[in-house]
Length: 580
Image (cartoon, rainbow, N blue to C red):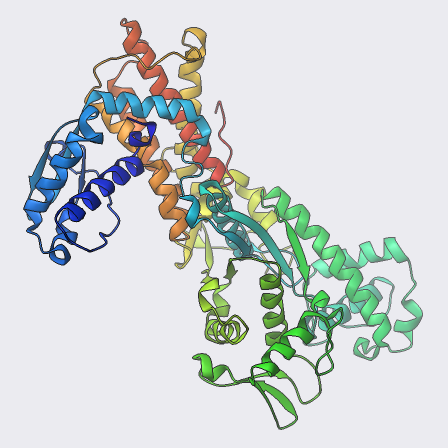
């Protein structure tokens, strides 16, 4: 018997082997679907149950109940012998297992041995991939707002979970620093700079109006003084008439200043990045084709080589309709300027050049219509494998205060920034609440609830459970720590202890599910359930028991819950306080 049996995935794998052996012995040449275990709602239906026989029987030419009986018998005579007292076949073919105390003690032993690493590497090695996750990727033209906070929190939590289960993950921020928006940003900064120097330089109508540019202009003056004042005086009041080299310098200075702010804000939100890729870098380098170098030129050459480009009305078009788009798309305008779409194609080609097996882009709600064309373009690029690119569309955040939608700050125009949010509710509440729902649904974030110290506040409820366990263990002899090498005592495992261990045993499966479905909110929900299960256990089971073995077992159970809560909170970017 191995430790692999002592969590739900290990049990499922052993039952899978028994099912496969039974099918082979019966002469059926079919591949059974993966065995999945669930916890019955009622204890009289067993500790775990599976419908594996029911969903496999038809393709194997077997009677479901008969197949379930055969699989149960085969498993109980083999790996299940030491951990299961009996099984029952229920309904049309469900296999219910009644696990014994040995399994529960073994589960606790495994939990204690692995600690905060419980569930790490749960993904089988053949399924692990070298992945690139691109998220946030905001134009460097202004501060990060609350919507970006959601995408940042979601993306970071997803990266942490994917890496924890076994993927090799690179986090990437794509800096959109090329094109019209950056030109307008440079002109807007020039206008604010001029205003601070006493010039009549209004922000262009299509420029950036936020007051944050006044702060940026002050920083620019502190850095360069009045270096650009003569150039502005020559064009007052029209900053769009500035020489290109002046606007270019201001644009690049502003870009770097905004990116520095991004880094500080994201670090505050506990969101790190491994790579920052400027869009402008895609145009740099060898491989000139159709007048463009770098990855852009290489992409155009690839597409021309596949006969996927054509010229019409002075523009260069990509035949995206061949790959499911509703119309072909322009890559090079009649003016000779590239479209954003061309940059995006080159950027994804660059990621393929870097050897990533799978790429995930997390985009905002306003990018929904962009998905078909991007998938079409990616499919058009060699090696024409659309499954390598996954596009996730996030939804909006509505802030509620006193039950009503409300701005939290007016000091930056109508922008509610990430820093405003963190100032109001703290990093832990922001991170936890921003992943509380599926990313494809609108999230309502209640500011009043987020700062409450009550069980109604989800993050407080989970963190309090962790802090309470720390307090309990601190008051036990030896801090509740089990001496190295000491086995879990062979005590009778009561119903509340069983329920808590069942909840703990689910953790690796929750992680795999969250990783597979790109759903950090599943970890969020699980932590609330585990905290609730612990509180029930604590109400019914006295940890400091007169029986030393029972006390040691329950202390170990508390330690395991503490570790799992800390690990889960960490995967969401949330701290696990020892006191509150």
